Length: 555
Image 1: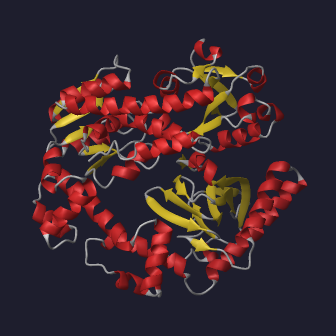
Image 2: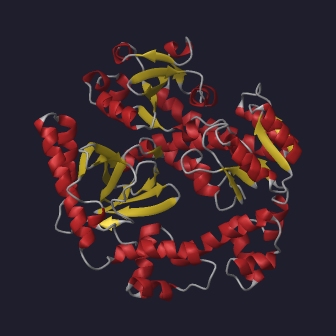
């Protein structure tokens, strides 16, 4: 790991640190922090178990008593965690007092770099729990005490960073990053173990326990991801690709590729020979079920997090995904510099943009009047001459939806459901988004509350909500600091806790990805998400997840 930022670079008598708020995290609610744009500094501490973080384009794994610091402007995501994970996120502001006695809010200081470990003699879990509980249950002088306790915790972090010697668990993470940069070279487990100062056997055991795969499985995964990316570019032969990613024997590479993907390299290259651009983000989700990996597509760890995490190594040309039409000139320049065959886009783009696209390649516009994801999917399949594949995919999708409906009917027969959204301190009942259509059109087991049918996006107070008989709530909470604070306070109110859906444990906190995406692959992921949401209380759901495992493989 990189050494921590030297203390004397930022910890001076002119620096003031203020704790803004603190959040508790467990395995059951990490989906609340899928990806968010940080407006303040954040210290993430894992006190138990394991968690995988994604800060901008960097992935890192934390284990008990390990931490990571992020600066404002970072896109932070929590990708996954172990079942027994517990941790805390401290949001804070840093001020610097200048010579004119003005306090300036800082945004670019580096508190610590890399993953760091707390002192072993510090009971981090108890300290963090005390700060969290006091912060949310008290005010005034007790909140001031929280500030002092947090500063003491921060001081212990500094002392931990100053201690000499690198812990082996940090070296494991460093080796994983080393593999990510050198997987195309000849790598042995012995060589990597030497970097950690651990025995080969123990290093291999620790690596597999931490990442769920062996060292060489991880090397193979990276190599094949790079192979797919090179194949997508279409300018190298199979032998050249094999050598490029570290295989001297192209026949061994071909066998390995077929074993892992189910396709030979030759067939895969035929499938990606046509360079298709997914110009708008939801198009990616229509192409994947058609076994088309786009040559270019919007990629971002927040705005297109799922596709970024799973396909960024296979897509040669990443486009900006920062909102709609925000950086279209940049995207246009990137596409125009490449020799692409087809561009698929929503029709909702600017006339100037359309003109330039049509000068670049053949353009498929998905008509705005086609609102249904199924019709959009079939429209694109028809244009790409993949009708048969599309209908087979839809048939399997409907079978899976029917099975989930059958399981849900037993649990939600005649029970009313509502989709709520929280923005700042306001609640809304939603009717017009993709989550609503999925629940009440694809999954007929859920019955919409009558109020949901009156008008779109209507505000509702907690007082009005408490007067309604809503048995199940799907909850969308906007991921910004203010909304998260208000959501935390709302859950602590007696009115919220007395809601029927809350008392029976039928409040499902869901994220915008995939629930608000309108594409074939997103709707498949919604089916999987519903099954997982209810799998804890239904053995039928658990068995169903195994039955359909792998039924929708891209390759």
